[in-house]
Length: 218
Image 1: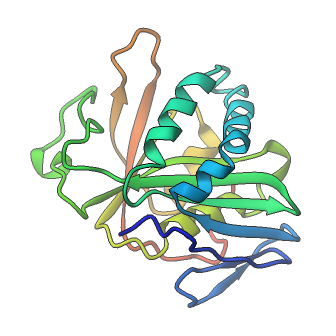
Image 2: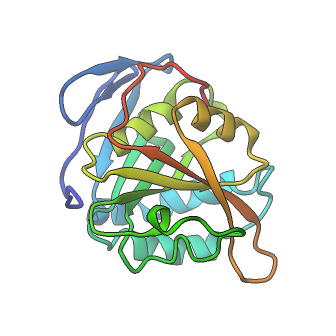
Image 3: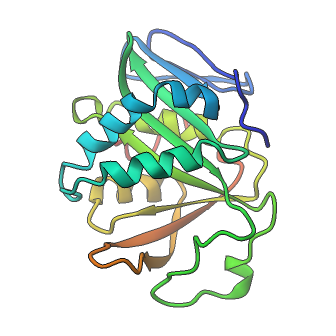
């Protein structure tokens, strides 16, 4: 699936627009606009996404500044075929975003697992797996359904068989929400660089079903 340059959905009064046009989901947060961006559009707002990422990752359980690595990672990811980013704004103010891209057959996503998985789980081919790289909402805007709407928007219409993400074991609110949305833990991974944390690796089948706000909010 392409990066959907120029694709987008705009709704006021706390409505999430499914890019397939099938449904709208009312949110408890008023006057939130959700928009779907491709890599070129996302690049125009890279500084805003970087600032939000830095803010969220200064909070527990992260408490670390990976702003430099984020900038490099985001630059690489947004140039990959199939990259997509969903943003949420209150007026022009960025309150959250989610982004991801398909895994390539040569991906190292499964390379640093703490325990091996069967080859049928880790084997990648074009169209098999979409990686949800980021899902962030400002602290003051959480528990209003915004994260779920961003999650659903970025995954809606994907043609891959499944999606994956990595989340810190100590991120309890995110863990509980993701499990209630249908994700399941399959492994743990750790970057070999010194000081790198351990992450839980989660999978879910695609397409996802929009639950209209059910499940644990974050």
